[in-house]
View 1 (cartoon, rainbow, N blue to C red):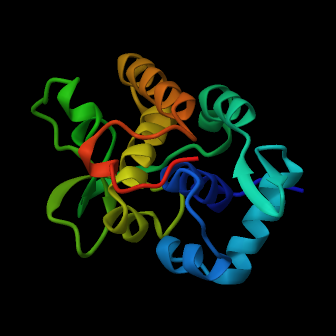
View 2 (cartoon, rainbow, N blue to C red):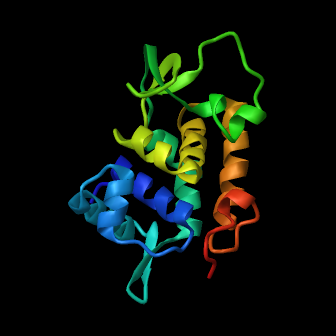
View 3 (tube, rainbow, N blue to C red):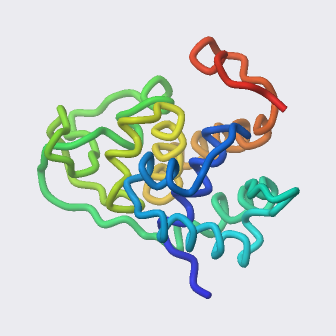
Length: 187
């Protein structure tokens, strides 16, 4: 069994929905994957012990997930950087890190996306459907930005991303504090 990038996307989506009910079909649509890909991602996440099955429900194994994302992700899913493209901002050019990092004169890193509004230097997304999934879910977008900072950010960006990601993972399963997340049901 080999972990794939879409498995991490699947797990981050589970964190973003924070315990709300889901089906393979609904996640597939939201993530831009097929239901079969979503099901396979769940099976690999369970086999890698990054998710657990409780009472017929698949949930992220937060402790193992955090360890993998913080210490292993950047060595397994190395990003490719490229030329100027139109896309969606990531790394220090998007929330939540854009508030922490001073902008430079360099073009921002972006995921290539024909629907993107920003021109910047290409930074390969974790999985091909990441821009679509991020546009549909702001919480997922922020988690993916943090993951990108861990995958390919400078030391300070990586440190800030790890601190913020750890805080968010520790908050999984609790009632969210911000207004944008107030509509969620909590366990």
